[in-house]
View 1 (tube, rainbow, N blue to C red):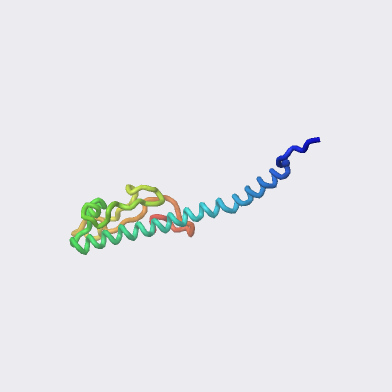
View 2 (cartoon, rainbow, N blue to C red):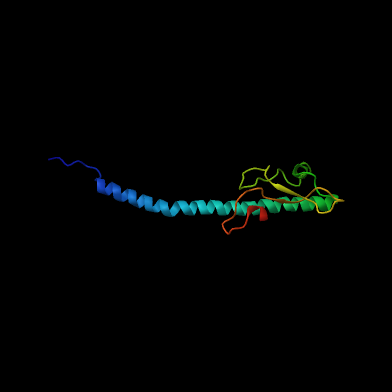
Length: 124
């Protein structure tokens, strides 16, 4: 009688069980690291925007009327994306508290939801 070479059903099931076990460990860690990296990128992009607004104010003595003004005057090359919403159009623009100097004094994320520690994205 000839022996057929190949894997038995039990061997295949064991391999599938091992692969599924590894995936149940790896996939949640992957998504957690993606969320964490978006939070870090959001904080960095907010820092860039706020720094540009502060430099504009220091140079001009007034706040910019729009974020595009900061790009036009080369404070940065382009308006950074909100990494959570993946759009540059979702930034919440906060007006100047001084009525004599109108413009954008601060910026926050327009993303809905909360971070892993429970902080709302618009509170950064």
